[in-house]
Image (tube, rainbow, N blue to C red; front, top):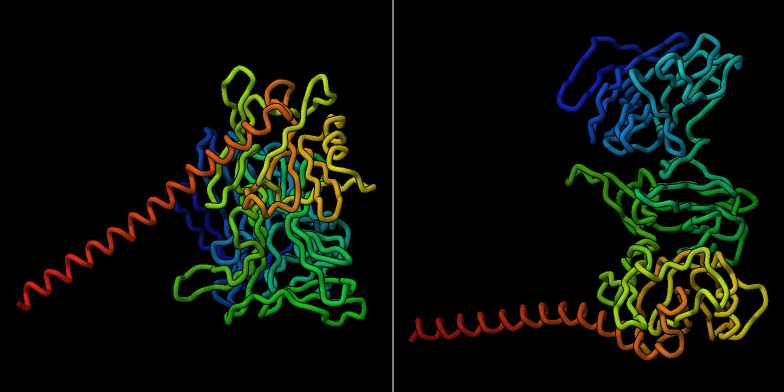
Length: 459
C-alpha cells in the first residue's frame, strides 16, 4: 500500500512528492473549490493506491460539479470505476475548500469552509490509529491491534465487490438522473429482487428465488457468479456469470436499473458484463419516459388517444391524473395489447375486472391498474412506467390508465384508442421492416449484378 498525492483540475495537473504507507491520525488534506461554477469539473486527490492487482484500487478526495454546485466526497475507485462514495446517498456541497481529516480522536471527517462538517465515520474515541485500504477494496479504520472500527463494506452503494458480503435486509441502490424514483437490489429471506422505488412504494421488476424455496442468509460475489448462502451458512444456489473470466464486482445501473456482473477485459482495457439480469430493453422499468410504451420493436412511443375535441395528446401532456379521484374528475381507459413489467401493490381480495378499475378510480394516489385474468389478481400503481406492448391475442392481463375526465373517452372511445395505438406502433414496426427488406433487396440486386459481370468477363 502506498500514498501518492495529486490533484486533477480540468486541464491542470499538480503533483506533490509526498508518499507514505498509511494515513495516521492527524492527517489532513485540502482541495480548493473553484469560485465560479463550471459544468463537468472534477478535482481529485488520490491519497492511497493498492499495488496487489491490476486494475488496482485507489482512494480519492473528490470535488465534482452538479446542480450548479460543488460536492465534496471520499471515493474508492477500481481502475476508472467508482465503487464506493461517501456522497452516494447524500451529497455534501461546499464552497472554497474540501477537507479530509483523520482527527486526533480517531474520527474520519469531511469538512468545508469555516470547518463546516459534511460527513464523518463516527469513530471518535474508539482507539482508531489509521486509515487503510484492503486488497478487496474495503476502506477501513483500524486501531493499534488492526481491529476494524469502521469499514466501507458496511455501507454499500450501487456496487458490490468481489468478496463483499451482503446480509438479508441489506440492499444496493442507484439513482437515475432527473428522476424522483430510485432503483434497489434487495436481499430478502425468500428471494433477490430488483425494485423501482417511487413515493415510498416498491415495484418489483425482476426477482430470483433459490432452489427448493430455501431461506437466504447472505450473498457474496464469487469468481463465477453470485453465491447464495442459507440458514446453516451453506451455499444453496448461485446466479452464474456465464463467463470464464473471474468476476470483480456486481453493479446496479444508475440509469437502467439493470443488474450486471463484471470482469476486467485485458484485451479491451475495460470492464465488461458477463451477465445481465435483463436482456430485453422493454423489460427495463424506465425504458421509456412517463406515459410511454416500449413497442415490439424496442422503440418508445407515447400513449396516445383521441380527445373529445378531436385533438390527440401524447405521453403525460393532458392525461396526468396524479392526485385526482372519483368519477366526476377522472376515468379509466383500457390499453389493449399493453402490460407493465412492474409488479404493483396487489389488492388483498380477488376482485373482478371492473372492480379493479374502480379501485384505482377511487384512489387519489393511483394512476394505473393491472388486472390478471389468469389469476384474478388486481394491482394498483402510483406511476405509469415500465409499460410495454404485447402481441394482441397473447394478453394475460388488462392494463388501465387513469385520465382526466373527458380526455380519454372511457368506453365510448376504447375502439378509437385501440386503432390509434396500433397505428403508432405499426408505423414504428413498419419503418424497421422497410429498412430490413430494403437492405435484403439491395444485397440481392448487387449480388446478381456481380454474377452477371463475372459471366460477361469469362465469356
